[in-house]
Length: 451
Ligand code: PEP
Ligand code: CO
Image (cartoon, rainbow, N blue to C red; front, side, top):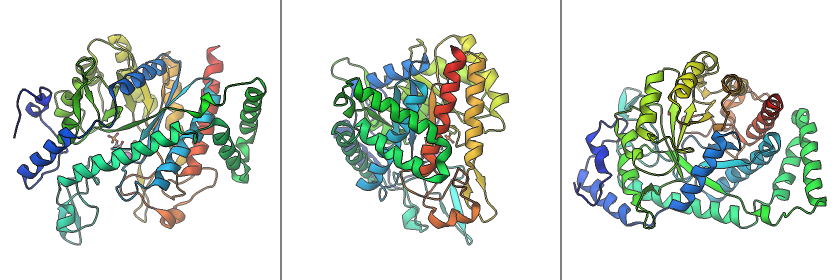
């Protein structure tokens, strides 16, 4: 291994690292990371700085963050159509939320890099055969064969390639006119035409009037054709993240150039662990998932490590408590952070604490339970005088059947129709829009209660 002074941020190697693949050939891994270190950055320091500033605005209650995308992206699913539909879904949601919040919406995809997954078990057993668990396309193949499940370092190069291709498409779509507000608004009009969603028609009509008002008042729609859509993923694979960490030539600072926003998962957030260490030195805005067992002291230690100077927008806590727990476990954590005094951006992940298994064996989530956690999040933060700064959700732009409920009453029997996720169940296109309408109403009530 070359661990020399040219990579000063390799300090994570001295810390315990959980959830890492066991590669059979460490020399092969070394060759791959050497190649990766020479590849151009996928995102740029200035973009990460812009996002950090926008996260700071959200933390102050001046913007709302919409972070969403697949639980696990796949190489096969990184097609132009699927990426376009995901972007379209995020843009459609953002228009509704912008109206509800009367604030800018910061748009961040779980996209262009979300190819690695932490797993609760290292192995999977089927019919008496035990093999390594699937850890995402960045690590191994979903196919249940010894060859498929063996971690292959070449997949890190494929991860880079697919991330670069996706980012290229995102940049083209968001800078090339596709994101035109009027066009996005027309897509939303199609949604409320469906009788199942008639309860959202009043709000949709209001948005329509607002767009027409803007038009009449001579708003610069040309300027609104260009939007920023940032990329985020879980910083899980330490060798990959280290290889993509670079010194910015302008400032001399370190940046993780694999994505604008990186988060540390619930399973890897040990304050003395390698994942915290690898993001400690980079200037990107970063997040940490916080589950129901987190203690005030854990959060304090994370702040101390990840944002010692209390820079606004640098550190986000993404709470994923479960709808039945959030109202009990979140208040003391918010109190602890307030006592500490250093600013934190609070986002809700209403997905990961609410996963259930049906009797037929499907992993699913119930739309109403998801909304219940969002409601709980808003009420706890409002009570504590803290901004509910945004949400982090798992969604796809396609019409999959993975989450039950919603106005179309997707029931358990329909899960089998189009269940495509390899890991966690995602909101489909319609459910995502419905969620945007519901949260827009919450945001509006929240704003009115503050006036
Ligand atoms: C995820 O975001 O897909 C995930 C695994 O979340 P968590 O770390 O919160 O369990
Ligand atoms: Co997930």
